[in-house]
Length: 258
Image (tube, rainbow, N blue to C red):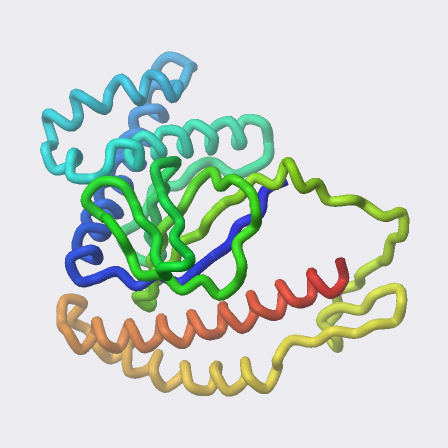
């Protein structure tokens, strides 16, 4: 069993610049490999394996020197994730992989050589990234962690998602079971009679705030202007708050029912 713990991180301006480079590198590599394996499949009936994609990396780094600015294992993780995405697609567990966009959420993965330092409120990453200030809002599981994913949301917030392997701490299932019905009047009603609702007032207030900001954004026609960039950030900030309210509710609900 795996469990992810998501924490807020606060990179410096230099670290933000480096992360922007890494986001761009991994996004470019994902799109390049996705196009290459799709083309190979159309021509030969077979896609590119992870090993085949990894063999292409050294040549690409020589041709595009800026690819070498990102940590090598971060780049290798791209081919691993893309290969897994194709396996999940062909086995019917997921949709066909999409090309990544520079807009919206960005992320990179570190598979190893990361050091968690809760006592120092920091995480140490390998390579040029170094130590990043971190807020650990809860105690971490007493288990090994497999990967650390750094993400940047559209509102500019940075997070690190730490994936722990809880094989040594298995979850014990109980024989009791309850039914959960999702409805319109109440978000969820259990067979035991318990009813759960979203924070409707809080969400309604946020949705009221977002409408005038969306109108202001729509009036900014010049996509390269700072005013449009600021208006876009304000809209993204409210959408982020709405997402966090929903996420908080879902986590509490699932934990309560479990």
